[in-house]
Image 1 (cartoon, rainbow, N blue to C red):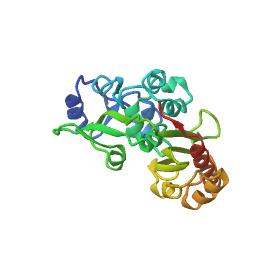
Image 2 (cartoon, rainbow, N blue to C red):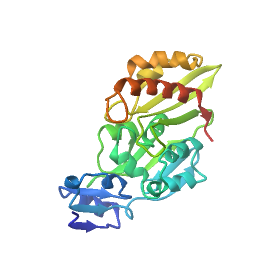
Image 3 (tube, rainbow, N blue to C red):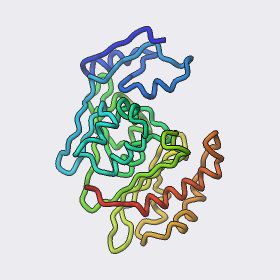
Image 4 (cartoon, rainbow, N blue to C red):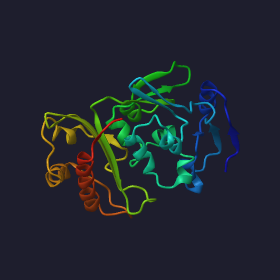
Length: 266
């Protein structure tokens, strides 16, 4: 049961409040709603008013505030279609109206909706820790060692770059069994600057340079050949959503589909 609730007006005030052990940063609250009763926090810090809630293009970069909701991202004219598709994969609109970009990164779940596509596109984050100036670093680095509050995410929107984002689940509203995103260029009929990120095949979504290396500098293979190449490099944990073998087979097909679905960023 929540015993203390705070709603700071600034990032510095939020960080001071969050420095107390047992405090939970809250924006949309969708992650906290999934906690079991024994895990419910007693001290909550609502950061919704403290972190930015804007979406804008700054030249060839999309800058998204951490407090932006999934639905706002989908409805934004500034966001590329591939990012909207990733946000749309959270099928329940009630959840999309509350879930925030910063919360999705902070939860850092294995099948986080936005993380794979942001990793594939080479996103950076602006984050601030208590007593330190805000710093900008690659999203992959922040996810590996999360510290402080994410204020905004910056995503390059570069001409000639192609990307895709796909997910697999038993039903539209179910948690994904796997996610896959990729970004690349097609030069002379060959894949170049290829980045592949997957979720559902480890504790967190992650870039997979080992998968990208299989196809870098080569013509796009047939889907069956992609599946055969990536399958030995995938591992998964069996649960109520499927066996480990099923998840790996489905994941290999998902990566093949993602590579064949790349479209130019706009």
